[in-house]
Image 1: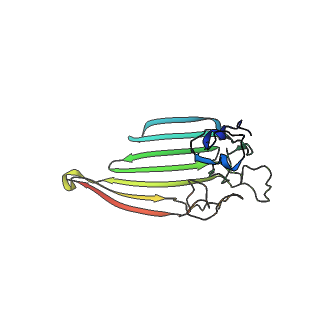
Image 2: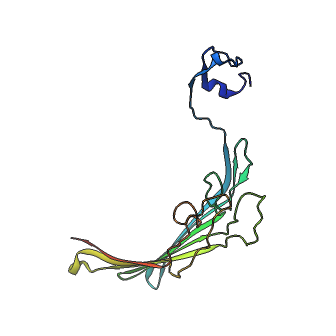
Image 3: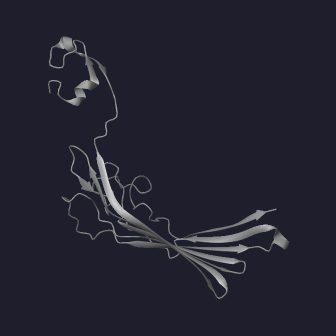
Amino acid sequence: SGGTSPYCALQTRALGSYTDTSPANFVTAWYSTTVNISSEKTYGADFEANYNATVLNNPLKLRTLVTWQPHIIIATPGLDTVDQGGAGYNANNLFPSPAFRATITADYQVANLDVAVLEQVRSSIRWTNDPSFVFSNAPIPPVAYTALNLTYQMPRKEWGDGEVFLNIQNLFNRQPTPLAGSQANANVGTFGGFALGDDPIGRYFTFGARLRF
């Protein structure tokens, strides 16, 4: 480039000239620096709603969290501009990004027993953000996972301040659809294999107790 490229400033030459291509004008030093050359643009909305009520003289709490992010535009010089919104694994460490996600909780307490239900939902995901790839399979379908938590507060006069609990994750044993982009590592449990947030373990239980004296 005859010294016109900004990368020329990242090297020092023996004779100080960028245009001198003789062996005597060898590079004596290289400099490494950070250059911000990429851009990422997105938009969306977050929604939260809370509702508290009394049902049959017992407290009920409802909460909903929703995230909508339809587009994530990533531009890098020398590479194709891609839209990661709603797409699966791709090159350059791009992770699945469903356009819609929601978390819904319901908590109901009867005397010393507290029952909490958690529902997590994501929208469908297309296989890749690369429009040059055509897949015969349908996009990764949407999925919802349910968790149940039961907590019993033990009477203080007998046990002190304590509780026992039972937690069940993935209550209905929903199995996620395997997801690996055409340009990404598909090793399950390491980089790819399933969308982030999906549960490949299946239904599992946790039982325990908490005591304070």
